[in-house]
Image 1 (cartoon, rainbow, N blue to C red):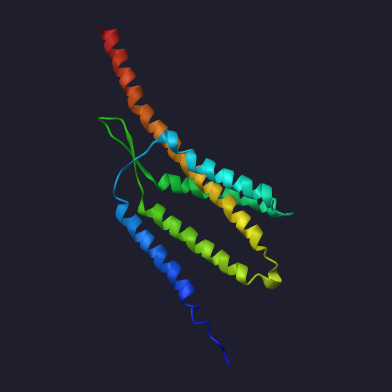
Image 2 (image 1 turned 45 degrees about the horizontal axis):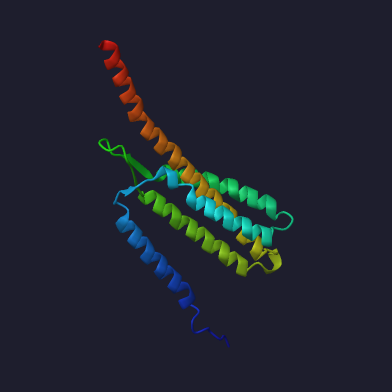
Amino acid sequence: MQVQQAGGWISYAIPLVVIAMVMAIRWKRMSRVRPLKLERLWILPTLYAVVIGVTFSRFPPQRWGWLFCLIALVLGAGLGWQRGKMMRITLDPDTHRLGQTSSPAALLFILLLIAVRSGAKGAISYAGPAGLDPMALTDILMALTLGLFTAQRLEMYLRGRRMLAAPRAGAQATSATAASVS
């Protein structure tokens, strides 16, 4: 006779409901333009790098874990660069201030990453004979996330800086032309 856990399905339903609610709120706020401060884009990747540094110094990856973390960091950087390109950055022509609007593609991208992470979490429970180490998998996911955050913010910074430089270059060319005509 099989014994069913009373709360078995609830352990799956609650995270799904929470994720659905958060994504619905994010989807609603997506059309709103938020100010983009280029000088603050470094903060989140730096804080996350410190957390990972402390974690790796206390519990360093073992054997091949370092190589897999490096591969995950590079993969995360590629994914982060793509996600950064999906973010809409606007320039107000009057004030020359940058604005940021999340794109639906960027939100769906995050949902895909959550699904992959959930699948990886499920793989841990079936790790037995395969020999998957939950700590190694956690280290790899942390490295992937660091690459994602860092590359996304770097791509947005470079694109925002180019957008700000274009009107300034045009204004300098116009003032130089006006000065030479005088």
